[in-house]
Image (cartoon, rainbow, N blue to C red):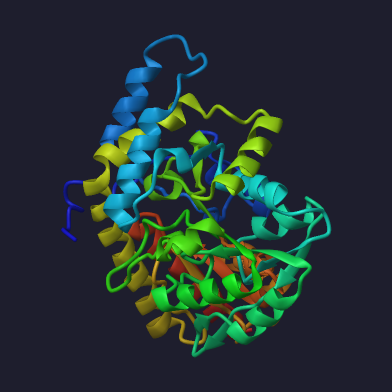
Length: 399
């Protein structure tokens, strides 16, 4: 992976206030303070690849933004991208476009399960996993991750017990995992596959962070493990996290099984979600076709940020525990040596440290006393946030 960070200046500060940014402009309503430095919601403070900005700007100059045509170009770009980056051969016919990964997950839950069915998740995990199940009259079934020296692993004994229950119809996994940063190994996913085959449970795999994996790790698409897996799996991907285009609301579902694809497609039609955002289609295609050099440079910068964060915490805040994430741009911080309850931790971070992080409890009860930090920002901003936390902790010790 070449270091192209000089070509792509990720240190350049870009003002986001006043742009309708959820991350920056909503901090008052979210945290109750305009003084908070926001490192929460999972988008990046970096400019998109030049090819993406150019394509969107070029199209925006045409003054008519009407219905867009068929998305074959986007589908072909997706086929080529997952082959090149993840060594997975797919067909265009397997792809269903959707207005975001969370809506795609919900569409799949509606299509492949019935009200009252159990859906297994592995907390602490992305909060919309809970809502997508609960809000659609399904039952949340938890298979909590277990830790060894801060390293998260799948509890396979508990997972098998949950899969053996005939009421549980789907397993929803996060690969790479948000918020703990695990990039699941091939052997771990193979064991999941083996168990799901044994108990005939379909796997929904959220792989939105699949392109954001650091040195020494390799992302394995769950459905790429073999044909039997393909038949019982649904994969969710998008360029949104990778290329910082989440506001364009474009994602895709990859469903190799014709029967399952037909069921999901029927839900798309029923809800009239057939057509994607015009600019999202163009941006995704441009990113996949001409954004790879930018991505390689981004990964170097993000991994350096992760190293800086871990070093800072280990040397200056050793009572706060963190393990360097293997993927994503999210760090899972353990404050339990200071705060046993999330409410006290949230109050401290906002009012004392003046930083805005995602409260750990929103990722499940297993996140009590934790917080999620988004380090996809300029290194100077990251260091400022860490310094604020250090200063606030020192001040609290003096009381």
